[in-house]
Image 1 (cartoon, rainbow over the protein chains, first blue to last red):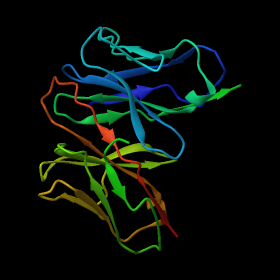
Image 2: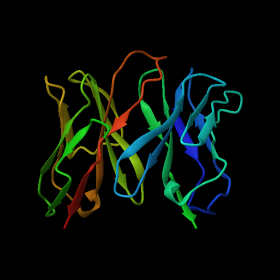
Image 3: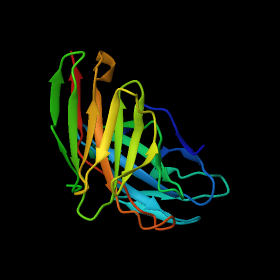
Image 4: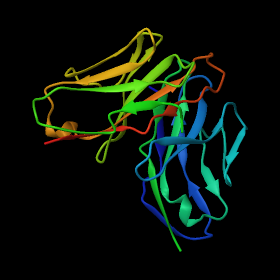
Length: 111
Length: 116
């Protein structure tokens, strides 16, 4: 079945460090791919998305590129801030409009 | 604000009891999803409804049930509650345009259930 695998956390970085959170997926057809962020005590919020191969989603300095050849959608940010501390979820939406989420990666950014 | 409203925000109840969680989707959204988030199991998909009909089922226990009403709001019923059912329950909604639309799912803030 369809699934999403993302790197285990927790991840701890210093402010202004480079961030990569790996995400790979398994799906038939051409899913849409998403990154969601969950801040403490809140629900999940859409961070960025990509709907077809080679699309790049970007928002708030975060980027992820839909790589069909490697079935990946890695999240990157060039310079993280303390306010980026949150849990990040990779997700896919398949052709049946079903969503599958990764287990989440906790990021803590220290000043 | 995602536009998805969940009530109650917090709920404490005893083992063996039954509770109902309510969700109002975003205006215009026809699909409603329920997820359970616990510390040890991450985000687990429970069930999805589309325009009043069950569309997909995930890891939902037989003690749990859900429905979507004609006005599109949804309720998740949890019965014979156990300590292990303590978790954050999310509702989410989306508009189903079609397979290639890149449709987004929007989450409510969740209902915290504590079973004591």
